[in-house]
Length: 182
Image 1 (cartoon, one colour):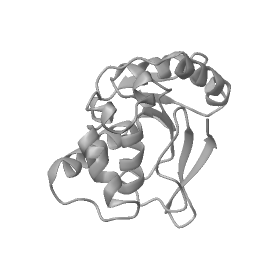
Image 2 (cartoon, one colour; image 1 turned 135 degrees about the vertical axis):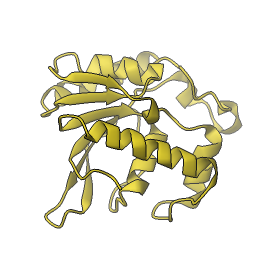
Image 3 (cartoon, helix red, strand yellow; image 1 turned 120 degrees about the vertical axis):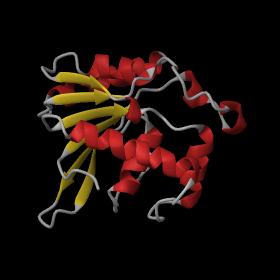
């Protein structure tokens, strides 16, 4: 179960690793810094983020998410929390999740299942804090969130520094609206 409370999501800015193709990427899901384009992307969305009603900022501990968070939250007066369970998945888990496709049932076991459970825990931790929260994390986390809350009418693959508002409609169903796409 996911706490039903609106929140915002930002995928980290671009890294050199994001520019690699296919097998070149390998499994380097660790502490990769933003490149110059990624820093510029974060600076472009900072005015948008500054205007959002953010109470709490929750971020992955990975360097690219932390750097993005620091840039986009420069003018926000909000509590900052690092949440380990918002870290990115491995390349293998990403392949497994995207192979299943959008709107597929959650995997019932294996690495993708474990990652989904980790994201569920991280999302609920963020949503337990004063809100609305801003979550700064990764493409795999965004994909997992969309799957966990059964989002329809929204592209699950998010560009670097994409900004999404997740909210509840009158029937308490989740909606997602992109506020910015790079």
